Length: 275
Image (cartoon, rainbow, N blue to C red; front, side, top):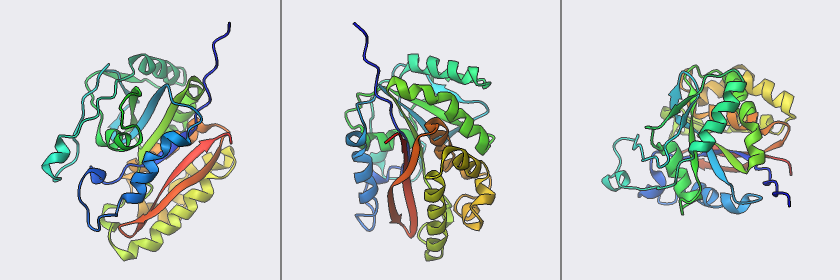
């Protein structure tokens, strides 16, 4: 009797909010309500329950791709100045050491020199959105870093190397923010800038894979002034998880699946799948 083949998983790029924003009071109170609802709806949008989650976080930069390999990672409270109770949050999802080794082998085959890190805990780019999307904390999670080089093409290549995991039931998630110019939040002058970059992202993600990759590789120029105004130079770490998700998508179709205007700027989520 043959073993059923896991359903091919989509890849996602999600907004993870501002620090622990979903678990504290905000003004106005519903500032993050729509984003929270989107994140909570992710499991029901999937073709099957994932065997594991590989999450690429904007909050971990390393010279080479690094993979959390502990069996039970702790939490890294890498935000500052928030209410005391937000430093007592928990997310006891198991790690995925075997998946870490599998991903490392795929990355090695693609010419990278991955590193397994058994000390790194889940940072807030991981545990904050996952507390909403998978609150039971029963799906193993592999957290992966970005490259310190911030090279767009290399992040697409990272995703391409990891693409086989989709056919093994692994949900690949890029966690960042599609707009991340800190001084722009709350400033009405940022609204048209963010809207234009968001329009460009939605148009780009929906293109055939070759065109999509070309535009994402050259995003800082191809997106016009709105790109760099949305992600300043050497601070594009919140955009690059999208590149990993797009690279892992292969020829799968991309589309914007969520958008909202938060603190005067547009933020969005994108999905790549075969539907």
